[in-house]
Length: 473
Ligand code: C2O
Ligand code: CU
Image (cartoon, rainbow, N blue to C red; front, side, top):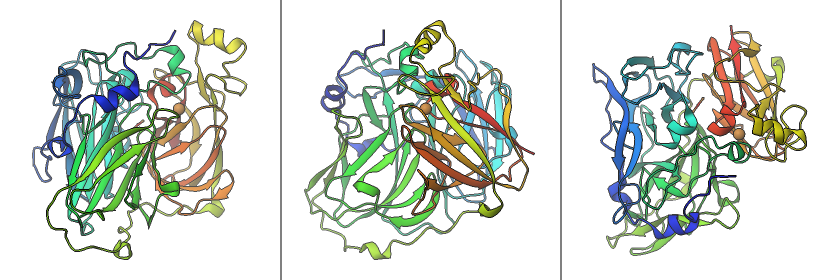
């Protein structure tokens, strides 16, 4: 019934490919202040995901590469990008996490018409906040993200923290066949009703990675971006003590991650300060044990034999300067519920897949819902209306048996409670990972007018109905 991955995940990830990560840095950054702006061409390409002796993989990417080119500008600058569609189907670009004007948000049928094959669309907007963001397709996302249409977008602080290196890792996940081609069978209904399409090949900057070469004593700002469609990462830095300094681009009080795991649901980002406290020639792994019995090594931190740089102490890790979101006024907040239902083994009145639900699913009816409604991409209607300038408090309740990274467009929000308890850092985010049967409350000032999607960022769940629209007017 399901599309069986042709390869055992673990074997493939670990045995295949062995690209040193130094060779896998993103393509030359597209710099600021180019008056013409940049040109992103969505098109097919061939890239060495696994590395020789495996053949190259046919992908869809910006510029034909995966990830697409790194866009790096400074806070306050204006981004102008001409997106040209050389695919055989419509596409759009969403600037994930950037508080853009509604018309620049890239949601087909809601904020713009899809960009037809052969056509172009120009996106242009200011970058109000510094941080680690990304851009990706927002049309036919299960397949277009699954084939590689995403890239990193870095907005630098006016005075970035002092580090020896600023490193971006775009984490990807592909389902490859033995010939290293991408398996078809997107939107398999059984998978859609479970965790979504998880691949068998994890990539860092578009390649299966082996070594990340460092020098003892270095301090690195590591910007992690989960661009995978459905995979959750829980990274453990064995032998190191990374500090989190930002979530989803937004500064947070520097702290060590809970349970020594950096957890990233789809679409989420984490900025770390990583002090390389090992000795020359040490080899220390980063492992990911998120899925039971599928622990694998993402990459090995490989120390060179250069003389160590002077050691730093964790005490001098400074908080990043704040961004520009207005502070939510919780006392005056309008409260709305966002109840997530559906999926296999799920509860709920509308979307439950047990009993009659299974037959409904196989017949093609919706499998996921928000507040009892399974939205369809061609028919998006606002279900929540917010007064412009008001503080909104959204109480998200996951009544399903699956993880959902819930993403709000056009705003960043504070995560104020989890399961009824105040969060320690009241972190700003644009995507909150809600585990099965758990709850999270988020708060923000609805200061950006327009119709904004809120949806699960696992494309298979989104397309299965787990999305709705919030109107700010
Ligand atoms: Cu990153 Cu609606 O998406
Ligand atoms: Cu989901």
